[in-house]
Each structure stands twice: as structure tokens, then as C-alpha cells.
Length: 100
Image (cartoon, rainbow, N blue to C red):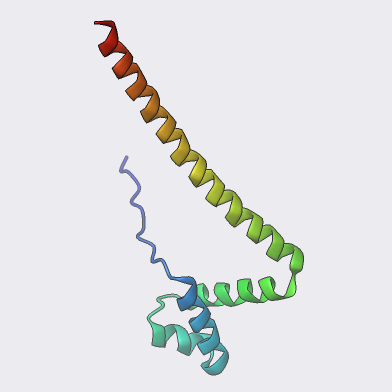
């Protein structure tokens, strides 16, 4: 059995997405996607739907804000755990040295 290959997904900045949404409002999603080099017009359409949902639904906006904050905090926690592990290893190393 062959291992599954991961597709390389393009990542777009929030600024690019906002400009793409604005352009789509002016010339249409299909033409905007083509002009900006977005391979799949459905990607741009999803950004448009998400943007409208964020503007219209306060609860959705709060949930998305909380998700982003949660992701940030998880990343910070992981970083702190790594720092603690390094400090524990360093402490053990220096304590060993003193016992000799």
C-alpha cells in the first residue's frame, strides 16, 4: 500500500483575501479568481461566504474570535512546555555535575 501524498495547499494572507473579495464584488468571482491566479473559484466563493457570515452574524464572529484565541493560547502553551522541558533537562544536567 502506498503512503498518501499530501497536497501542497496555497496559503493566502488576510489582506489578499480581502482584496480578492472586493474585486469579486466588482467583476464577479470567476473573473476575479482567474485574474488573481486562484486556481479554484470555489476557494474565493468560500471566502466570500465566510466574510458575509462574519459581517452578519455576531455569534459566529464571537465564536471565530474565540477559536483564534484558543489556537494562539495552545501554541503559547506548547512553547512554554518545551521551555520547561529544556529547563528540567538543564537542571538535571547541572545537578549531576555537582554530585561528582
